[in-house]
Length: 174
Image (cartoon, rainbow, N blue to C red):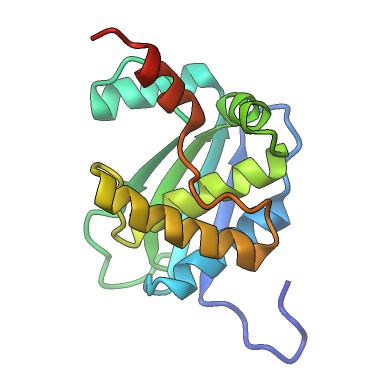
């Protein structure tokens, strides 16, 4: 929350929680706003939906043609509208599987709140133009994530990656 003497943030994170899991909404908003601000995203709104593995699997299949659940999906706004909706530009949407996040948090010995915050940071970095499709880009993204995590007081994790993806990839004989 902004200090009474600070101007309001030019960013807003709307959260729709479709799970029964309690989430740290204030921390997730701080993670989104700090990341967007630090990495030059234009002012506007990001919509976050917290969903189940089944729902994120459906989204992953529909939009990426990958028939498996994942931790976070990012959907950047294709073209920023010329005029804001309800006073805000829509910057993009994030979908996070809270179930997937809990398993990843357990694997890395982190709290669910830290894992969710890192997933929001990861998604917002994608909105800012970061990518993680090759090792050099992945490393740049890890550095940016670690900086944001340190700024927010999260468990330090300089080599954060999708833990379950790494596990599945290392065990996949293909």
